[in-house]
Length: 429
Image (cartoon, rainbow, N blue to C red; front, side, top):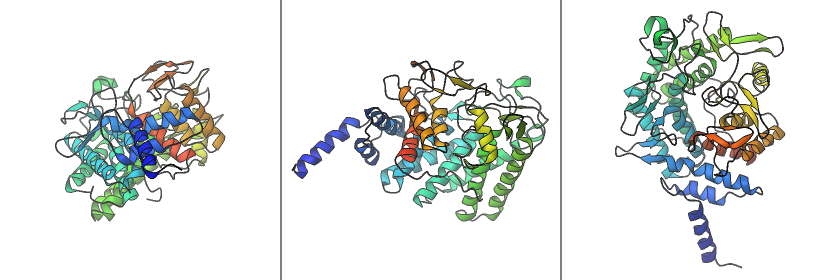
């Protein structure tokens, strides 16, 4: 029998072997990676790399906040950063160091939103990297704070500064609910001299850009509207139960209900083959697009973000369309098949969409099939990338892209290791 000292020595070697070469060293994360075992050696290697990836991209700033760059682009996206740290929520309850990191990230996102609620990405020194107004970029910080609170019970994140950020988010959403009348936002990449195509009032919230950072064709982006519904429900709960501000809670709840009614009234189409399902974008004047994009929120991700359930009939109709050749953004190859994005080469698949397909699948065989495709997409560095050629995974975009790796580690934990998913909101609100 080996001695305890020998065992501890071997464990230390294992920890060092999987520790990140640079960046943060969170012992609970490093330990979880080192101790993860799977009969499939490729899955074991990819999970370990994926779980540690965010520690290489996050750093504490001199002001006590924490910055999470997206990968090989030297900027932090509100959306990406919120998703990149999400797997660490599983370790936050029992690890003060992880809680400290998450609190610092939430605090920085609050500062970003106050600087410019129309910006989607910022630099370490708080400069605006891009001012592409994306509705989901306002929703992600809210859902991260809500999920952290519900997972840890820690209300320390709800500072006066966080309250100001929630105020800025709510005010921006309210303003953009009637974009034509109330907003001055323009961007050179939008149609009609930067103003966007004409749109009618629907109760939904106008947005300029998709989560892919591409300009919307029509400016009511249904997946982002769904996510706004979830985030506004979270905000109402935070305002009411933490800040004890009934007026703000009522405002958030009112806007949430109006957006949800707008989705159901203006965001649905009826297809002869698939039945009633969700559109991707609409203009509120009778025009719309039926497709999906790999970036989250997507129509495929509606149950994951907490808008609906995997058994909802309208979602099932939508999903059947999205994962078919009838969807113009669904591609197939010899190695994988899935949804891509107009942001990357034509017919290339995004691991983000593959993981989301698995996360929202109803059966274990489908989850395993998705996992097999993800493992087959490994080009040799054991990481997931932005997109890849489904016939040749060694052809890919973004050598360093943190988001899909974080989502992959969450997928493995919840779909194969029996870990309960952490919700982004309370569907009953």
